[in-house]
Image (tube, rainbow, N blue to C red; front, side):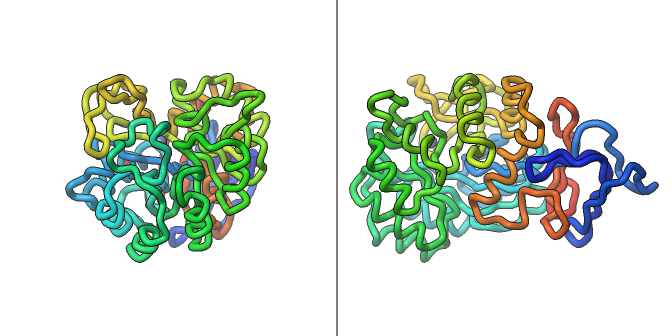
Amino acid sequence: MWGRVLTDGQELPHSRVAIADGRIESVTATGRPEPRDLRFEDGWIAPGLIDVQVNGAGGADLTSAEDPAAALAHVARTLAARGVTSFCPTIVSTPLASITRSLAAYGPRTIQGGAESLGLHVEGPFIDPEHRGVHALEHLRSASREEIDIWLEAGSPAIVTLAPEQPGGLEAIEQLADSGTVVSLGHSGADAAIAQAAIDRGARMATHLFNAMPPLHHRRPGLVGALLASNRAVLGLIADGMHVDSLVIDLVVRRCGADRVALVSDALAAAGTAPGHSVLGDQTVVSDGRVVRRLDGTIAGCAVLLDECLRNVRMWLPDLPPATLIKMATQTPARLLGQTRKGRVAAGCDADLVVLDPNFNVRLTIVGGACGPD
Ligand SMILES: [Zn+2]
């Protein structure tokens, strides 16, 4: 294929991207495409999008799925149709047996015609009841070495979201980080000192920064202040226009830079479907087409997918270079997860690509060298 390329925070001139055996064979700048090349005069060839927080999509909820394999495949194909080539299937707080089942069912794997799973994101159950959001109170519990041992036996999670100030929280961070899991801080009322201790113990991410945590206060900077000030944590941000104001997205991107921001959808089953009722874990939720809420009005998550979040940020920050924008949904999450062959358009990387038009609409998705469902 031939077109302008976004990679490594830069825009390359028109180039040939050659693919062989599921990998990118070469990227060569040239004004002349080969006769057989797919040509994209405008728009860009970019790394496929990577979403590290996806609870469901296309009507399927991963936490409560009766047939996890079928749900995963359905979500993966829904995502691939929208430019996402790999993702972390995400479950909310749930009993131990459901977590081990999900670790086995949603671990790293390729999926025919769909986005690849990079491993499970376990959101909760070791979170603050006061900041649980839509997580069910009865499923929350204290972190214990014994429970985490059982998780690791079933399969290593890619990401665990926990509240470091809760009993066993700091010890759990060390245990998980030692096992190679990315620990993300969220659903938490931690003060700045505990948050810094958590980062010192190995926490490397913030889960939907600003949501389900106390707001930034100039005399009590808290978790949000500590995360913004640290240069060791990647900040997950939901750019749907509802969870975080566009002004705040602007502030964070300019303060922290694209190397430290991972755009996430936090998509629920309702994403990619018409507005209406659906499920999250064992609760009924309702979507207006953008935001999904519990029936009492509590925000539960997002009804839009990552491509739409990118278009939002492009609209809000029109002077942000496209290569900087795309990095927050590709290279930054890939690096966070230690995925060295993903998130870039470079020789040797997986042939996970998305072709975007000048307005960042998805024109084509390629996963592992194969065209996606559309
Ligand atoms: Zn959450």
